[in-house]
Image (cartoon, rainbow, N blue to C red; front, side, top):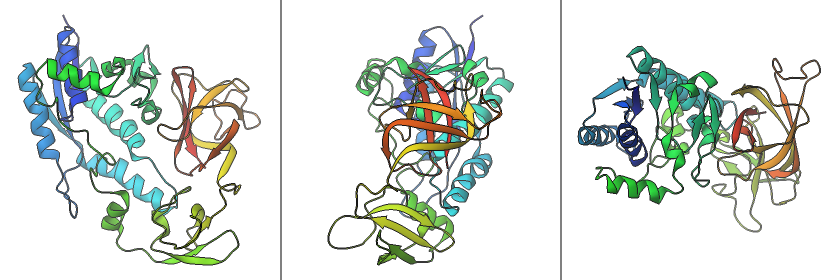
Length: 356
């Protein structure tokens, strides 16, 4: 009897090809659309109905059962509210990482297993093997950065066949070869639930206008006025509306004082870091070994940089440590509190944590 696999079908080409491949490989496939967000925003109609119809159309083409799971309430609580709280605190969160942790590989996985599935599958550009998370063949598209908080047990119940494709063009070619309705559909842009609406517009919609305050340069001079400190992130250059002369870069902010700090000096030591501390740690298989050389990625698609890990006193193996201290072999620009740093051991994802 073939294994039952529930495929998270978003209406995009990647998950469509995932479902088609698994069916061809002999799995008993069911397509599932996750309804996580349906609210229209100013200037943008939420495309969920179109995405649902596209996913359903492909399921019909493949001759597989199709369902919809409604996670909208939980998504709002676990992803959107988390994101807003982080911005309020002056940090820059990554909602896609939280979506994978809380929704796709927790809520969705549990619902599928309870419904009789043996495994789930997604259209992520990554690879799973024996509960390990491995990088995709497509280095440009590799999405393991967003998946580092998924558990070993969840990975043992997950398939990600798209990880074997060398390019996105190969995925589209496969979809065209199979005659899938989504073969030419454009990739979605923006954060996972907002689509084409930018994060600033989304926060304005959710929180309203923010109090303005001073923009202060490296000489402690006021050089402009910001329209809300929550909108600014470390390393940001554009959108400061500070005119004339050299470009300014955001190097910090004080939410209590409602001030944003900038510099024109690209060598400003507030822009560059060779050490960083991570909290809210998650290790997929086991914690990293102190002193061993790993690679770290501090933003999606950022270059990998060699690093070593040290632990707080008394936590030599890192099992119970609250903070991991990462020492880099070179300075990295614009390390941003609230973002994630992800450790790799070759092509295997070790895990990571949130930058403090």
